[in-house]
Length: 338
Image 1 (cartoon, one colour):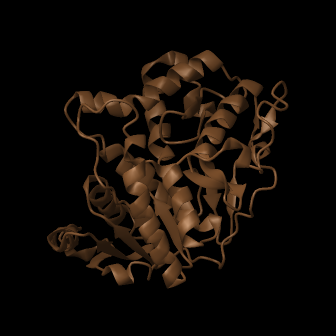
Image 2 (image 1 turned 60 degrees about the vertical axis):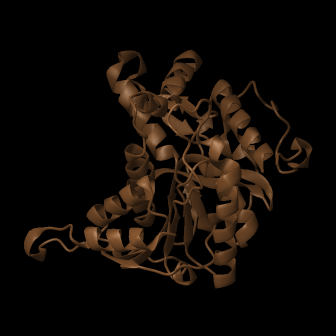
């Protein structure tokens, strides 16, 4: 259900100050504080994953291989008991010989234990659109997946959850908002993970075409993991036409894999998922979605940020007018979705 744009009280008028550079914080100048309800730990973490489909299982593998320095245990839950048994066995049989590099233990958890953790990762989806589906395949999943997200939001609320709630399922940003509305969690507890792979896809094309080379050192990604994505070739030397061309390539990168006959889940599971989640837990800069809004008025927006023990810090750059207008357009569309 779309929200009436007039109800978004927190937003400045569209196009206001469009002729001068603007900081990203202008989108919602008085947004809710992005502080955690309690300081979070950064070592010996308990991580739980819900749903072990293509993305969830690949993300699990990434955390198992890369997360040994900070993760003690990865709990796994899926509606299919045999899937849980399979991944408990297979993941715990992956490792270095002679235990020279300890990896996090993988263990089953029941649904009523799912929020006994420091980080909960939501990978559930009703159905992934089949190969050959047209349009924005991410948004095709929204109505079905929002009900699942709301279910887990209600479970988090009942558990009095104090940890982080990470949304990896598509469409990331609207599902984060669904969790916010259903869970009663603080906005800083909820984060969306879809922009990491868009940044890496933009880098992939920038390495192949010298016209886009500035992106590798000066570029940024903003917005949703989908049609309103904003790729900026550079902040200081922003070129709108080049940026829109690179954005188009990045948005359609998943379709290029689908045209080969495969589902494009590996790069998202690692670049948006495992790697970005580990950077989050380590308090390092990465791409994920955070909340710009007051109460229920606002949206989750992807950008470069980091999470300290107590709060979110995002990169509040001074943006060229044309770039700011693109981000504002994406943000307003996200606000209107839910």
